[in-house]
Amino acid sequence: MIIYCKRAIKDIVDHKFLNAVTIVTIAISILISSSFALFFINANVIVNSWKKGIRIMVYLKPNPPETKLEEIKSKIEGMKGVKNVRFISNKEALQRLKEQMKRQSSLLEDLQENPLPDAFEVQLTEDFQNQDKVEGLAARLESISHVDEVEYGQVWLGRFTNILNLFRLTGYAMGALFFVATVLIVANTIRLVIYSRREEVEIMRLVGATDGFIRAPFYIEGLIQGALGGIIGLGALFVLFMFISSNVDKGLTSGLFAIRFLSWKAFFGILICSMFVGWVGCFLSLKQFLKQ
Image (cartoon, rainbow, N blue to C red; front, side, top):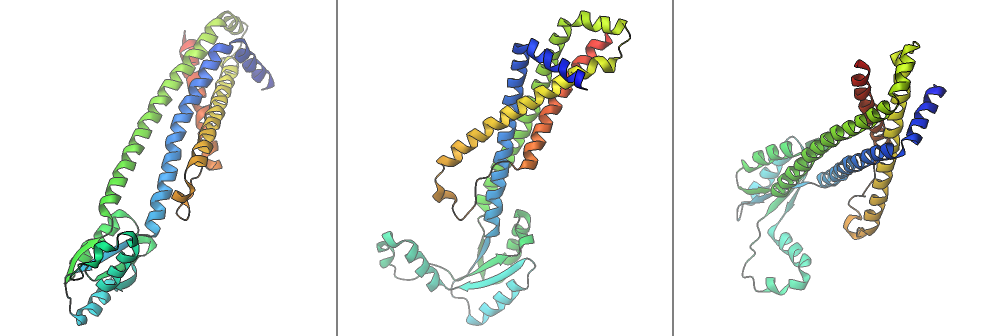
């Protein structure tokens, strides 16, 4: 094994330019692919933190009978997925609105009557905090008598989910594209190295060297290229992450979520994938060459 490693390192040193191009290509591919992965991780954190505080507002029709309020509340509490129900009168809602619009309070001073409806604020259990279940519960709430409208931020949630799915699809496509491109570049690099040593390879075959003995140094070379490219790409991503996170307004994220980098598990997973890309490129190149 030590002999194979020495031969692989010697090939890398002897063909600095070709190997540098391969390593940089792998690094760029890892940087772009892992950037999408980092975006998905933090986007999921944002969505999950929003879901933890998700509420459904059940707005009632004007002037509901007092006797109906307890009945409606009991029906809501009996539904699956409901954790807590709180009644908010139109007077309390108006008071909240005035507190939130202190600088524009003059706009509310000339109101002849309270335009806000009575409502129930519904808090959900953790297992019900996803879009499909929320929509199903909202439909059941709308069927209750004296309920006028149900609101849970469905427009925002739907749009954000669609955007996230679009980015996820784009990430998969870009990842696949860069995987194929990187494998081809690695394969061509190894092929050029092999051609430069074709006489040596032929002599090794003539003296009885097995294909495995010939392949081993090149496989190690591909793994080294993948490892170096992965480390450089992830290092560049970390520098970029630190620059962006240090310039993000802390007030935007305080108390809501923390921007995070890749976990060690994801870090080593990407590094292994990078080494696999280098090995695959080497494997394809050797397979074609040794058949000749």
